[in-house]
Length: 341
Length: 278
Image 1 (tube, chains in turn yellow, orange):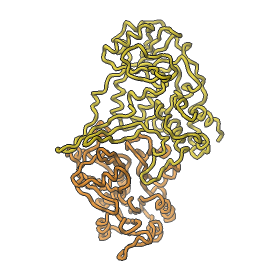
Image 2 (tube, chains in turn yellow, purple; image 1 turned 120 degrees about the vertical axis):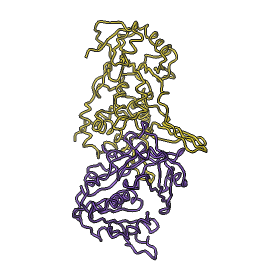
Image 3 (cartoon, chains in turn red, brown; image 1 turned 90 degrees about the horizontal axis):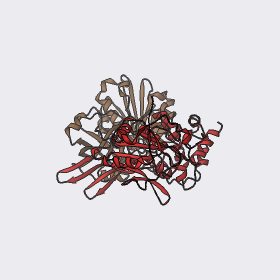
Image 4 (tube, one colour; image 1 turned 30 degrees about the horizontal axis):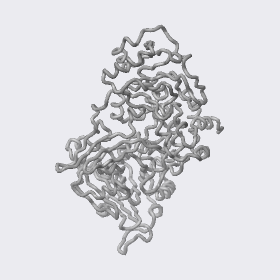
């Protein structure tokens, strides 16, 4: 299929932003603060940053919030009332400036939330999100998207993918979905027809470092390997890797009571935590950190491909950047590939 | 099931039965008749039971699907939620999500004998199947139940044990751990695996269903194997910590197998293919 390619002038981005605002879209975009770049709701175009390799947090929060009420309850004289959240309250969002490794993560996250049981809360949030991916012109040593099926100009998961044509250049916009087309239809003057532009030479170069199929094959026979202990010796089980990951979906469900009413809340959790699998009896199937590290790698590179037909890693490298003890997932994956069985 | 997977049914506690120290059974009825009409489950499935404001806890449905219009659960007061549940009185409203998980393939057991082996608080997941089978008694040959607990006091479903004892079409053997007997105890004394070995039930056309603490299970399986039970004819249930019940929260998997979706019911042959992490 031919992708609808348009040219968007650099100066037109602000106009596009304003048109989206006029159309009551909530816009989440990357902002730089204290040397961290994070997505937040953008009131105006000024301040949105384009100068970043990767945001500190992934953009998954827009469909899978860190803490999300899933129901409210109240007790009164007439009895117990329980009410689910009103899905109509979910705003129409434009996610602006997402890197291709995050947009790819949407598919992986969606696979988890739709494995037989359809998670309507997640699906409703996602259905109201229009994704503006922005290709990468820069990368760093933590990036490995090309080893896990992605690339710096990957269109997967974006509704429109913008690629800047050189520093300070205009943008190539690839209109990829109906959601993307509907944005073009409300701002068509900004999306100029264009001759075929090749985006490749404007993309960052990310060398492929391993074969994920090979890792998957190794993992089949790797459960009892000593390598899990060696790799996780310095892991302190802080869970930072899971919190920054675009595909980690593990969650906890907790009640928050305020007097006679309250809410049930779904909140991010991590397989790295020692209490994650702890039974009330005191028994813990994943008693030590090496088992929890194994779960993390196995889940992403063996269990998900087997059960959900998608891998659980997009090569964004955030877990390695965030790790307080410098565990580097890329190095560990390479060493798994290199081990001879 | 509603669109919101996390939305529990409201259940009224109709009856509370004290079973053993710290162990209670709730008979629960749906607050909304509509929910009750639509609700269906099969033996072996589980649910998420909740006290609003405290949280959810996972355990099996202990009543039989042949008994309509209510469900029962039996739990030991151990953690935050089970303590809160334990404080609930008859008439209180609690939450229930479910049913989740696979089931005992009881339809495929027609014409066979059934051997139930349970220890302690693990009788509840089996009680569901026992009553299911007893309510369709003509479908099965011999039904044998071997049930043990630490002490006489710890035996659950005491009234039902008496009923099974009286029934001519059920063979019930109860046992308590050495030292756990009372002066008037008439049952066996000894650990469950020892008693299984002593009784030596026939494996001919027989399905064995085993639930109990890990140590009991560990020592019972080899005895069953030596009695001629094949791995495909030995069933058990696994438990793991869960939050969602439907394969998303990420904590109940044993390797590639999710206890919430692929289980909780497993054959010994399936169990032997699992990595040692449960």
